[in-house]
Length: 511
Ligand SMILES: Cc1cc2nc3c(=O)[nH]c(=O)nc-3n(C[C@H](O)[C@H](O)[C@H](O)COP(=O)(O)OP(=O)(O)OC[C@H]3O[C@@H](n4cnc5c(N)ncnc54)[C@H](O)[C@@H]3O)c2cc1C
Image 1 (cartoon, rainbow, N blue to C red):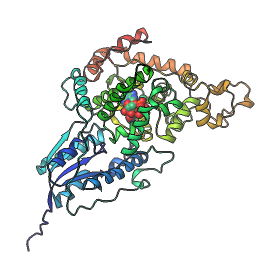
Image 2 (spheres, rainbow, N blue to C red):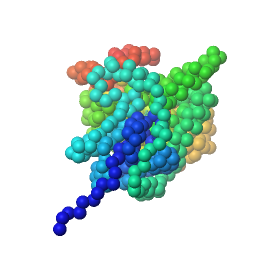
Image 3 (cartoon, helix red, strand yellow):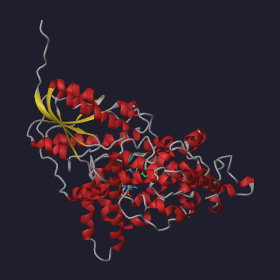
């Protein structure tokens, strides 16, 4: 008896959606649609990805909103988004049994080590089956960049290119079962969610962009540093940009248009929009680092810092920091707010890292996964570059140790943020709120009863960290390696010298 051969139903162009969950400004989708042949839009839920320490149910909840909307939008074009669960190569193999896949179209992903390895597997799978893998540049990231000197010009050109319209129709794939979108509560996505999740989807993204550009951005520059005002005046677009409900180019061009509409009396608004645009450029700049050195989620940019903190690991410190129980009210308020809402402004993210890396002398690879899981906007390129920079292990950035007590007085002078997130201290007078360990009559102090004593003494910990960092830098060959890191990954913008101390000045040249 001969072997049963299943007849393939039709030839398709497959579009693999990853962190680009939109129809507009989507070159892979447009390229597939323009062939006029059936288009199979695919999203793969990868269980192994969701079992990794950086992934969380919070991120899935956001993505799930995006997928539901994307399915509606693709359905209106003629072919609903297809969802499959499994490893990508298994899913593709199954689809290839029924359909002749003429090509796979996808954006290039600048991901962590896990997605990098997966992308290589998919590329091998395509090669072994002689299926064309057409990949398209993503945002301002340049694959195979020959020199950092050329990067910003390429990015500028990309940002100025026309935003692509969504396809008007997608030729349907016969007999394709669209598949279930797993619910937000599916145990596949890790531990049950406590706290809020920002709403996903294109509609939510464009609503945020509109409210930011029409009014919220006016005081962006002044309000972005304090966590309470930042949550309103910052764009809050980060998870949308990270999962691609908006492209960076769409945002950049909308900002430029808005800027052009503002009159001369709106200088503050204009400055805020410029400051916002430079952050979009930082985004691409940091992601380009991971693109150029894909193991940045595992190794220090400057190898001279390997082994510096690892032998001193203190798991009790780590746990207290993750739970917002360090005894520093402002640090704890920031962490608890992040744990509950999935978002924190830039300065406070940097302070949390600084506290973990310097005060508690923890290695960024130990505490990074907690932050990654909490951030709805987890974006590997920004995440690991920032973790390394704020921990002082790049060798090319100015050492920046945040003083958590100073930050507390500066960014929460009335103590409202602390009282909201650290209710144990709600009844303490403002005089003691920022430094409750200074309360001298024991009966009135909540320390050791409802709220912990500080894990470390601020000034001593900062001094020790600074001395250890100086020692690590005063090693033969340090500057040579720093120069190499700069050549490979450093920003070509002029260094910011303001407030830079003399001994750091030389290093700030290597940003
Ligand atoms: C340790 C650490 C880890 C971080 N991890 C992430 C991450 O995983 N994902 C992420 O999107 N951002 C990360 N950031 C950067 C920044 O804190 C967030 O992008 C920002 O707080 C998001 O809020 P927003 O969209 O309202 O920002 P806005 O101030 O409105 O900025 C607009 C956009 O610019 C980009 N951006 C802003 N600040 C930075 C920055 N410093 N570096 C690079 N891009 C920036 C983001 O895409 C952001 O959405 C991290 C910062 C630190 C210090």
